[in-house]
Length: 156
Image (tube, rainbow, N blue to C red; front, side, top):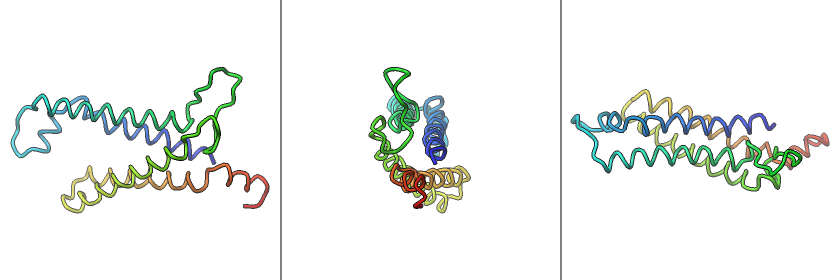
């Protein structure tokens, strides 16, 4: 059960890291693709692109940390969090809901742009965002402590 949970959190962080690389490394390339004329970026466009790239990385790292996928305990003797309602990871469920909503909204936006432009990148983003949103819904519905306790007792 928790394998999908960990796969979701690390896939979310990886997808966000992948999206932030062009924002951080080459704002000029992004402006060139979006603008009808080829020109250099303004300092404001440079700043906004790079700060958005950093923000996307921070959201990905926060997803991994707040869901308890990386145990943040004070000693090795403390148990690591492995369930959504574990006291060691109290923000796991809200983080899953928020990031799942984020992936659903972004995949919807990319789907609308894919229909309008037919751009391959929007199609890939639609599929990746939809898969991640579906994984988040699955984790919220089936990876909680209540569901796991039902399965252990044979009630599920």
